[in-house]
Length: 340
Image 1 (cartoon, rainbow, N blue to C red):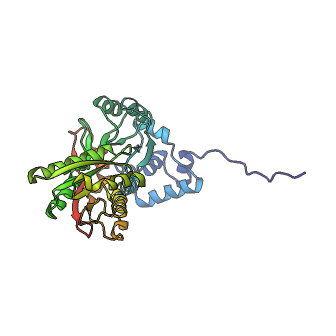
Image 2 (image 1 turned 90 degrees about the vertical axis):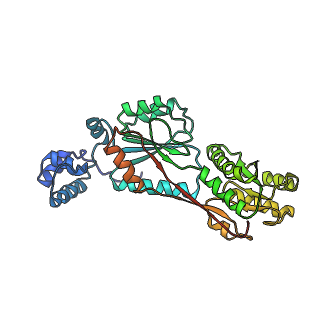
């Protein structure tokens, strides 16, 4: 009969009083140090001693108790929905999360795909976040903003193509992308331009804005803009390529580089010459687009603010109550290569 190995017995959960005794300081000092309270002057030697004692004992501050005292947590909530997972958005979230962690915030991504505009703010408010950054695909309302603020949120921030009344706004105006792409094609002498509109769910908000920017850029040049619905599937691209010549178009802005590469291959398979019969432009400047033949023209995008994104969020949290502010993040410029 085999015997179970001896299991270690767990001791009592360490408390801030245990840390205080080991470090030779008061419990208040422990709280100031471990909560990164900058309003109280504590020497760096004492801070190191408290942190060392906490590490030795395995002490971790009680987040729920801390939020009860403060009325909120140090949590920044990032609701997740069906957003495009492009390089630009990945860079945005990586920079934001790493910066917020550096400032001692806890960043929580919360799945919100099934929540509607009324339910979502109430569900988020239950977690008592100090800030919420809401993607533009969720229709945040003034009532929802009020719910979040009453729950202790110091900053309610939207991220998307358009601002929302009553909230701070990080605006990524996708019209600029469409405008830059069409401007480039107009400079190349194209006047009958298709604009790919992806049929995938979650892309409509971005696709509509890029189409609006394309139409705005073409308006004063007598150019024709033709929306082209397209699924991200080879069969859908093949059907569009097969009727290309019947459309009477001489260029296409294909929403982004992935759709552009998909469509360009289908056009080539059908015998349509790129760029002679169809100039092709994408967006996002993916490395793979530079490896194609012909190399893919694109719109390069950058997110830029006057200060790091995390510092901006921290400032809005520390100074609540001001008028909603707008921050335009997107810079875009066309990159000419062989496909146009």
